[in-house]
Image (cartoon, rainbow, N blue to C red; front, top):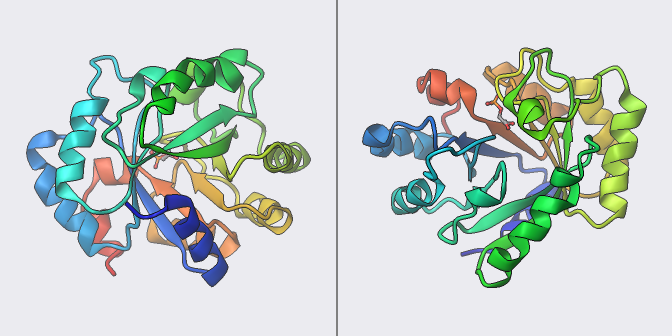
Length: 241
Ligand code: 1GP
């Protein structure tokens, strides 16, 4: 497998925009997975993220194994907790929920994950994860028991992102929450992008090609979309290569 982080950096340098399709193991219909990936491959998708706030039936490992048979795109875990680590993926967003003040998601889960990662070949991508208010109470808020940052509080969002970079994160992910009513405001994307040197990931509530383009234009290096593809696979048609 290619070096995932080096490729993201290269894309950032060349101004090439990246799109991750988020697959939630609890929601994906496995019987249709081949046709789903046909559409993925005809689209501008560059990465596959796998994860969800919960995985009550421990489906992650099985779903990752199936996905790896369907695609050569990098498959990156986006885990809600330590139980969602699969050695079959290519990489993992090693997330710290920097917007929250819950030690469980700042460091405890990471300590629990360490022994699994030490003995794995997963490419580890240290990621500062910043949850902001998408005008809908999302699963991430409930599960992490933290409050998102108000989108009006731009200074706090920027300083949180910078604190992530200065403490050694390789990526910053600003998240409005899966299924958010309002995605991350483009002014926030531009503000953070202008001050950050590491790549910026944006996700939550992006449902249209226009919103995707706006996020890219504002400065997102990689955009994550999940719900819109779950609801309507014809959205891939709008995003053809
Ligand atoms: C959620 O950012 C991702 O963690 C994607 O959000 O499901 O709203 O596209 P959506």
